[in-house]
Length: 170
Image 1 (spheres, rainbow, N blue to C red):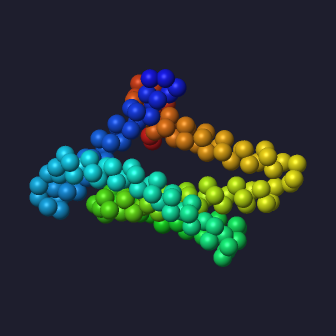
Image 2 (cartoon, rainbow, N blue to C red):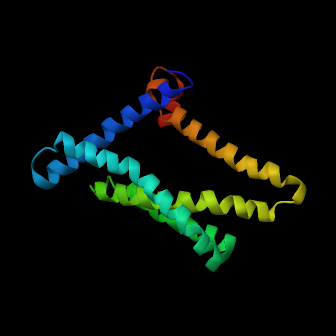
């Protein structure tokens, strides 16, 4: 595999095993029987794809929200979506509810769709004229850098033999 694809594939398989174990544990506690392989795959597919569906809703609704609240107001409202999603995602395991993970991913998808549309407009509006191009590109570059950093730091197989793994997981 070229261009770092092995990093994302190995990380996805680690997350897949953890999430499917969570699904099965929750299912057994609720219904007294193990989760079927097909149902586990369906739930995993929903968890993965619901983010993109939320992003679509966010991107399609952003023009209406901007007309009502303006660019700054839209970004401030969007922060509430991020807080709600963070609460749902962080408390889903404690509440033994994979539905909270699905709803949290949907809401953070809406948040991302709104942010990816409203933030460049707002940055272009507030930046000095001679720096608008630089600031507009800087947003995209930082998104890519954040995704890459998250994949590298979240990949236990990359850090398993490293001294840094203990530092990253403390």
